[in-house]
Image (cartoon, rainbow, N blue to C red):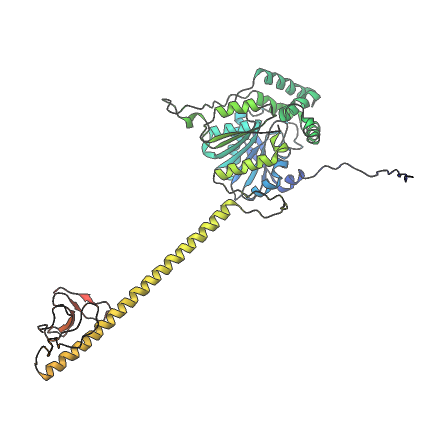
Length: 469
C-alpha cells in the first residue's frame, strides 16, 4: 500500500522565553532606602502598610527578588498578602545592580545586620513583626528575635543554622571569598553556592531552575559585595540558645531560648538538615515545631505549595488572618475569604440576633407590666366608685339590716377584684366577711381600698400606694 511522503517542516522564528512572573514582584513593591548606623539598607514594601507586617531576609548570593519573588507570587501566597504587608530587607550591597562597596567599607557583622532591623522597624513605625528568613537571613532574624523578643510575634525560619561555622565550612567559604575578591565569580564559587542552596545533584530534580540560578550567580551578583557578606557569615558566633529543662534551679526557659512561636523548616535533600535538628533541640518544644519537606532542598522554589500551606496554618494557629485554601479550579484572581472575616461576621450576626431577642423580651415584659397596671388601676377605680356610691346611697336611706335573708353581706354588689370577693362601706365597721375587700374614707376624704389589715391608698397613679394599717 503506497504511503504518502511526509514533507519536511522547518521551524522558524522559535525563541526560548522565560516566564516573567518573577519580575512582577519588582513592579508591585515600593523601593525604599532606610538609613542605619552601618549604612543604608534597601527595603522593598509589598502590600498595604496598615496591615500586620512580615519581614523577610534572604540567603547568601540572593536578594529579595531572586529569593522570594517566586514564592510570594504563588496563588496561595498572593491571597495571604491581602491580610499582610511584606517588608523585604536586603543586606547591604546585595540588591540588583548594586555598586561595588568601597575598599575601606567595614561590612556589618551578623549581630550588626540584626541590629539594623531596629532601624527598619523604627523607620516604618512597626511595633511587632513576623519574621520569614532563609539560610543566612534566618540566622539574622533569629539573632534579632533573641535580642528583642518584644519586637517579633512569630518566626518562620528555613535552613537556619544556630551554631558557629565549622572548619570545613570556614575553609570552603574563605576560599570563595578570596576568589570573589580577586577573580570574580569562578566556577568553584558557583558550585559551592549551588550546593548551599540545592544540595547534591540538583539537575536531576529541576534542570531549568538550576540553570536559572546559575545564570543569576554569573551575571546578577556583585562578587566583591558577596565576598563581604560571606566573610561576615563564616565569622558568625553562636546564638547561645539552650532548651533548659523545666524545674532547673536558677534558670528559666524563656531567658535562654526564643520566646515567640517558631516553625523550623528544611528540605529532605538540603545540606542543612542536621543544622536545623540542632536548632530545634535548642528551642522550647511548647512553642516550636520542626518540619522536613520531602523531595526538595530549596523549599521556596521546589515545594512552594507545601511551604505556603504550612506557613498559612502556622499563622492561623497564632491567631492571624489567613485565607482559605485556593480551589484547584479557581483562577488566580479569585477573591479570597479569610477565616477571621468569616468568624467575625458570624460572631457579629449572632450578637445582633441575641440583642434583638433580648430587646423583644424586654418589650414583652414592659407590655405585660403595662397591661397589669392598667387592669389593676381600672378595677381599683371601678371598685372605689361603686363602693362610694353604695355608701352614699346607704347613708341617705338610713341604717338598715346589715345582712339579707340568706345571711350574705349587703354592703354592696359583689365585684370581681383580684384580692377580694366584694366590698364594704362606711367606716369599716360593717359586718361583712373579714376577708373581703372594702373601700373606706378618712376625715380628709381620701379613699382607701383593701381589707381591714391591709389597706391601699387610691391615688391617680395606676399602681396603688400601700400604707400601713
